[in-house]
Amino acid sequence: MTNVISVRFRGGCKTYYFDPRELTVQDGDDVIVETNQGLEFVHCTQGNHPVADSMVVQPLRPVLRLATENDRRTAQLCRQKEKDAFRICQKKIAEHKLEMKLVRVECNFDSSKILFFFTADGRVDFRELVKDLASVFRARIELRQIGVRDEAKMLGGIGICGRPYCCSQFLDDFQPVSTKMAKVQSMSLNPSKISGACGRLMCCLRYEQAAYEELVKAVPKVGAFVETPAGYGTVSSVNILRSSLKVKLDGQGEDVFKSYQADEIAVIPGGRPNPGE
Image (cartoon, rainbow, N blue to C red):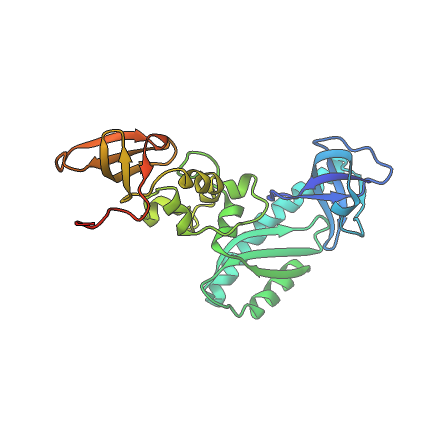
């Protein structure tokens, strides 16, 4: 077992392990850690606790210290520098007439590096822009192109469910989502109904997919020929969550339907027999 603390970087949902060394860190503490990009001011989501050695990627980066009031002031200055950098970068983008949209700016704790995130339809030649920004800020400049899903995650917002975007609240990584999931869940395939603010299929379509796949196995499909307590008929509609369905009974008229639970009927193998068989 390895003694670690779990931390979360600003604006991220994923947690990372760090070595507390001789420090005792409590949940909710702010700490200064060492990363590949330099020092960072991060929030502890779980204090000292043991985890299996297999869950730790070595070498484990150390926690340097608990954050002091001076560290918090430095972090606030970094946030202000990010706002200034955002404004200046937008101005430079317009001057260079670049087809790109600036999304976010991040400045590391020691201000040695400033990272600019942007979206664009294609590749962008931003070499001159980098030179201009480096001359203004006297720091290492990095521009990183991101996708529309990452943009929604960074900016946040309220989804059609009335809750904050899942991607900005708790999703560690984006998982593949397909229109097949919407079909299995009997949702409208209207893009405006199943797409998030990012324009991609909603991540939440994946949450209940496994449960729906199990429920679908227990309910006949629309169009299936079935035997009911009142006779034979054809399934006209299905409510997967309630395991109920409506059946148009043979010989009962075009507008006569009866509702049944899935366990009250039996599917006829091979479907409706041909006349004369």
